[in-house]
Length: 60
Image 1: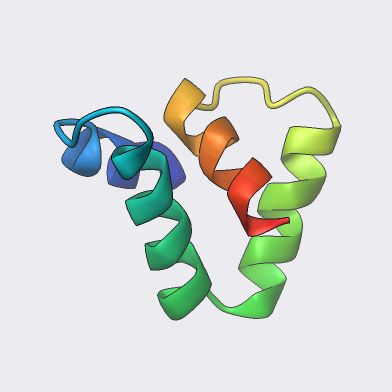
Image 2: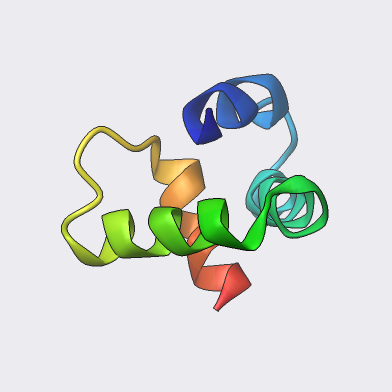
């Protein structure tokens, strides 16, 4: 789901896309979903869009 968000917001310039993704995740995702995403990134972020990884850095 995070990759889908990245595709939809990836048109935004520079850091704006990562900020928008982080904002969406922060506002709309259940804390358990956010926790799983953070754990996935910590485990190597296999399969995640680079913008999602950048957004996770902003969420921390």
